[in-house]
Image 1 (tube, rainbow, N blue to C red):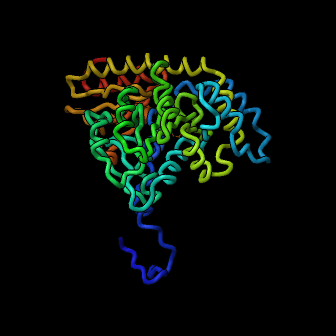
Image 2: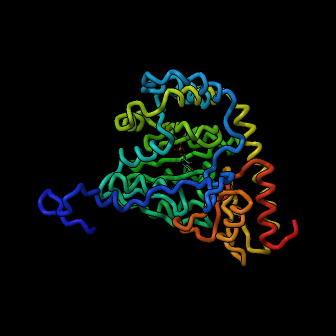
Length: 377
Ligand SMILES: *Cc1c(COP(=O)(O)O)cnc(C)c1O
């Protein structure tokens, strides 16, 4: 590092960030405007194209005007409702300012300087930030065809490994490993390594696949599962996430979280959203239908080098391996009014992550890509 320190004082004469903080590349959020400032339909941040449950919107309206009082510091009613919906113990649940806060707290609570935080290549960019924030070293294990490789993760464990992050389904690839593979990963880890299973897209899975990670967290002392209201519940603006795990894990996160980390409006909206499972089911069905239609349209462009990575989430990672480049596709989509995610900083310069949008938008996205490939619409 370039900072010279003599005794306890820095020669720069100004506050000096810790070197591990300086090494962080700040999170790059999905764009909503073209390079010329035009607003675009946002297919770049995996938000719910159907919006938010009407019940949650009503709860938000009712929360207006009650802004002077602090929220419930323990999100008690919300935790009770989460427990009821998922068959969990409310004492084994903690809520956070988005699941982002909880992922950071999991790293901070169990890893620090000299420790390693392990995750798969091409997984959620927050894991690298969460590791560095607490001075730990982020370690990437190789993937297998853009999918988490359990054997590679287990092989990358060292004496210094303290936390393993698994995004399942994964972002930005959309790939998913089944419950028995997650269990195999868990049984390959030392008992003092914390496995954090990030299920931000868990509600997009078939219902019978949704509870395997909860069962693992209920049975073991070193498994934490995180969920969010930002994706299928359509409440990203309110910043609400939650985690479940052994009481000792929840206790650790409770010690270091913000005391009033979930807003009063967020607690009310999330509570109401949990009560509207019809909206969740409709969102899942819309996503599955449109994702399949998009994947089929991309398969028909395979002779032009376009290829979609198999996805269980609300987006597709599209690889451009022929004459049409990802940058050309990104620009063509921006011209027709769509913002998508190009991730060269994550080692994916030849790919775009495209959120599954409304039906009419997906029709236009498909037409734009077909035209770019020289196929008549
Ligand atoms: C979107 C996302 C989250 C959720 O972040 P919030 O802070 O809850 O909005 C967490 N993990 C992954 C992998 C995501 O893609």
